Length: 603
Image (cartoon, rainbow, N blue to C red; front, side, top):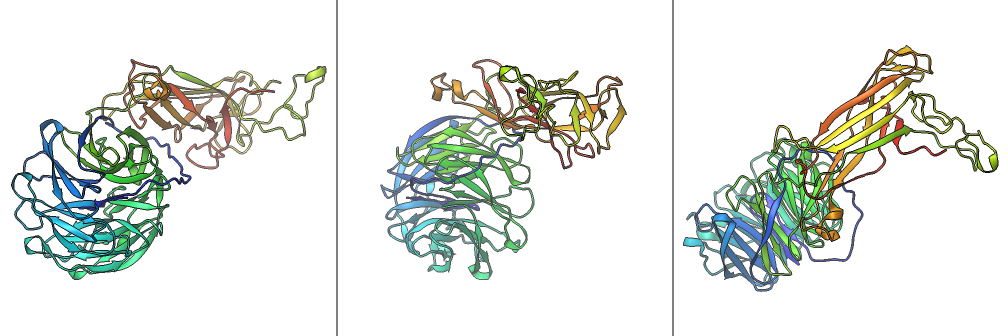
């Protein structure tokens, strides 16, 4: 098993492998993004069965360093960062028995960071005092509860000495150790939480300046909120439900208000739950976003420079990391997956190469290393160019309800005909497109949606990478629509309202990538939605044909910047349709019914 740490308001933990899966829903949503790609991974050997990685400046230079907790070798590997995202070491330092997690802070006030390491088998925390040049002393141990899993660091009693919150799985509680002079700690005070607690996150959830705790409980599928008070005391818990087997937790400001939010890794649901914070340390209902298989850890970062926090999730079952791109209102797009190693158990973020892009460090338990992924400037996840695709639209017809009947004519087998369902009825409640002939083709009418990949600017404000052209002719009103023009010689008056499309479309070169026996590049994907587009309709002035509805626009897909060389990509889509504007002709209001669909009418 593996665990984690919270040192700056985010808690870390990683769970073991299990052969169980839950049903989840992957969200497709459009979102503007500006950089989302990584080089690597570069692997650096550490101790045996690494469980957790933390970043810090252990030798006082400007290059971030790493401390990796190694469960099987009972030590911590310190890797000192250097220019160009290189690292020296490892130098190994003893911890307790079966160490699972570490945190770093300046416990003795000498400006050299210390390490606090949680030891599952010896039921204690080892404190290693930092010295010059990234060195550390022998460990000093402090007792906690039963089978500790992870820890968090904050000043709980306001005396400026960092304190510890240690999550104890075996005793289902959290031990608070108040810091004192010289990197010492007082005896543990324990506070009960849910069943099999695994990780802790720390933030001021209720705005009273006293740090509060959020604890992920694997057995009870919830998060326990403990509200901090004077002198390092806590009240609660108040429990908030999440999905199955929560094993990791972190805090962030996901929806842009002043209330801290939570992200919880649910190992058996293969997703993360977002809990948006509210007044008085309250939280909303969990919203879930898909990840890879058996996610174990999450870190909050900013990978696409749009000011919305993003997530990176280590997936032990699928041996990769998933990037979830943050968007307005605490929503996320993705996941976008990057191969990382064998048995990833934890993840941390820092800027290892001193550029403008955030980088990632991941521990791989089964190959005893830490993998470094470097963010790439303007490094979009870019599907190769795809030929423009035109989707023909036909009327959305009502199904024939007569037994063993089809829309007719033409003649059925044997020369007979059956008009029991002729002419077919269009399903839109408010519009018609021409007058269909016997085969369902409207007279004087056409309809289509055309999509194509384009090249937008490399970054804001223009990230357009999908061009969409929508055109429909001969659109007329039925009864009950307020946005209608003059009547014409055919049935119905000109429609002067709006249409709106509905479709989720994917552009991918997955079938040409290395996984499919193609080139050396990893597969890339763009997902986008046509929902929300409003297509205006205007009268033609003709007495023989109805209105024309037309729109040409561009979209920002999740990963902008389509490349025009290399392999061809493929379009993938489900049912594409156009909806009417309802009785008021407004596409943004309801009700709206199906007007046209992609496909071919078969009589």
